[in-house]
Length: 155
Image 1 (cartoon, rainbow, N blue to C red):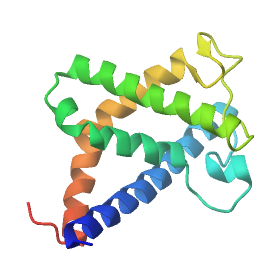
Image 2 (image 1 turned 120 degrees about the horizontal axis):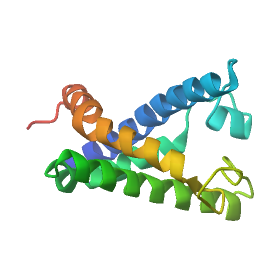
Image 3 (image 1 turned 135 degrees about the horizontal axis):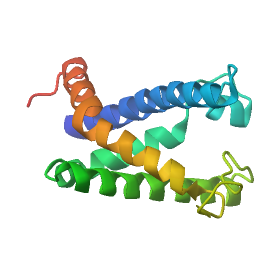
């Protein structure tokens, strides 16, 4: 195997864990605000494992990274719409996967307005738009520079 392949694999794993952890923090904060008390969300809550990771955020981040060049060239409005669409698709297919393969519903929006099978809804699609825009414009560029220093990747 080439060194580039291993560096890329390490980087993908690093990003997946980083963004799954940050997603778990975000999900925990959001759920705690909504519930009015501390709620450990994400994988911690769903699978009863003491692992503070929400993999859906890791997969969403990796998908946005995959579309990075395409998304970066867009204006703010297009970036909002497209990142929301991409992240909603990741959440929808992630929901289908957890229900059909893992026999577990990790989240359920079936009581929410404008939902599709309880896997996605209009409100969370809006939140994905904002998060995707912030991720592409601000969060990932900072983390990318940090990761390049850690993994000694030359620009």
